[in-house]
Image (cartoon, rainbow, N blue to C red; front, side, top):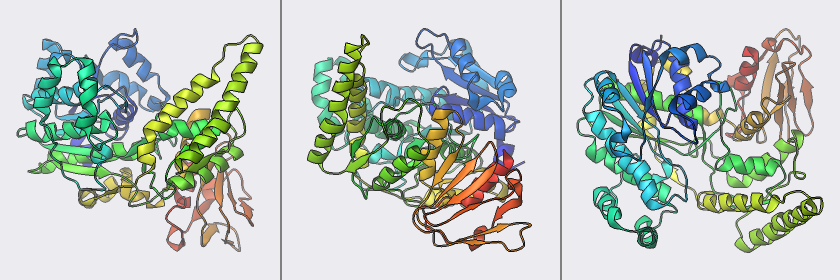
Length: 533
């Protein structure tokens, strides 16, 4: 058993936001990789006409939990809660239970809406964190408090260190002031409060970090700052995602032929991080914080831009090539995306490629007696694009000293089981698109991994008398079929197919002999995945 799994054995864990995207992956990873964890308490509120128990039941049915469904029923303990209410609306009986047994807290709950009104965002992201800290300070057996923030909490800085930056306004004073203000007054002062940050989300997440530091008392605390969290890389299987917020939604819109233009700076880094990498880091940070008990709050910038940079200008190629080879069902039109940093050019293409076709299609729907819908779809798309524009037009540098330190503290077994961002130097950015595609189609016939030009890829087919050396040119990709377990390596001048379609286990890659650009898919990872299927 690894050191991390050994620590969580017999422990009681409390997770907020467990029904969200990252929370679900965290629950699954704990149950699968730390099978001796005693119990996982999750805070759940009634929502959309569903009771707490109904939400947990629906959560358990998710494909994500296929491998741990039996443990889910035994070890998941839901606790009724509401972050907007005093004391988180936890009953006195449940409070006593939590105070006496919880060893680790993972605080994932937050509103991630960029356009959330300030008062509501402050309540969910800051006040709820304050109240959870009050509860945590009373817990008799608490070893670690892990707070999930965002790498963009300090997006008003070009270089972000692994430290907490003090806000211009004390959170307590701000919370007290907003209590007596009406909505119109709050709207008037919001731009002045958030300053050069783009939205209330990043502003309140920065305030929450400061609150955690100031009000944590003697707790052992760590803060995780992931960048743009996307589909899973490897665990529990490649490509899992339960929403299409942010870039994932735009990628799918492009694949459907809806999105044809997007405003972004071509050389700006699109810092995408797989959700399983963030979760693995979170669990490792929980172990390190509980075992080593650092004297100061540790901040972990969980980003990939400094390790495996992927630029927004590259998205155009990846989107089009991926979805042309693997067209989505019921596409609006042929995929074709154009990324530009010029405002006027972008507005021109929005009028020509978005609004005009939408109006014509809605006219056709009206004439045929159907309800028009395309302009509504495009309006929602344009709103999403506007909210993302700030992040697609700039690049940031995040320091990663604590990440390096944590990696050095792990055993060999833990490093193998925990895919940290440092492992992403072989992670292709095109894999994010492939993962999104795989999730959308619920397992396509062919999963395509896109890469940049390779210099040389020596491949050994065991049992072949004269193993070939492949020297692809142009922009190669690897095409793997889960059904036939067939691996095909394509390039502009070369196609080489494994002759033994049903014995992919005979194929291996001499990884140490590879000479690759940083953005090329790790062939070894791809082949090993299909060996295990």
